[in-house]
Amino acid sequence: MTKNGTWREAWLMKRLALVALALPVAAIAQTVQIPQDVMSGLARDLAALQREVLDVQAQQKGPADKYANIGLLRVTEPTYLRAGAGDKAATLRQVKPGELFPVISQVGDWYAVRMATPYEGLNTAWLKAAAAVPVPDDARSTGSAGDAIFVRLTESAARLRESYRSNPYVNVTGFAVNVVPPSVSINFEFKK
Image 1 (tube, rainbow, N blue to C red):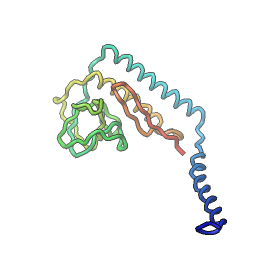
Image 2 (cartoon, rainbow, N blue to C red):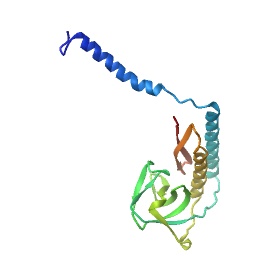
Image 3 (cartoon, one colour):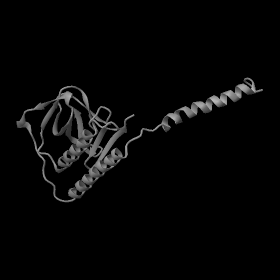
Image 4 (cartoon, rainbow, N blue to C red):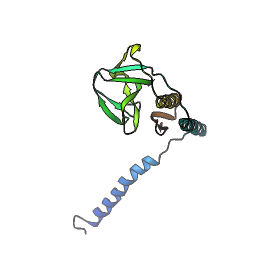
């Protein structure tokens, strides 16, 4: 007999604890069967993106072209600059109505913008389109070589995301692009 009951109760409690631990492991053990051609295609697409990043890194060491900005945005409501094109991307800083940002590119409902003051080595960020309005063309300015790299890699990542939008097995949930050093992070999940 145990202090809190019979030996049978103690034995039963140990068994229930083991079952409680086994249930989450069993749920994790259930895997989604992804066809080999889908996995090969994903690997091929990610390798192509990696080759592009390596190409940009090599070009970054040589002379770079200037990139003309698309235009300017004026922030219309308090919002946040983010590290990626999505509400779940890391927050870089809060912005206030009236702030202006040169536009580098647009992906869906998000604008890639250039920050006047770099934040933790980043000079680009993402701004939700609903929180800003375009400024007339006469307010345009010239961007930097880093902007051109950012646009190139962002467009490549956006094409990759778009190519998997209707895939029944894989969903690209987001991405982030860095210029220094050039890199792309792709977030994806396997659909159930």
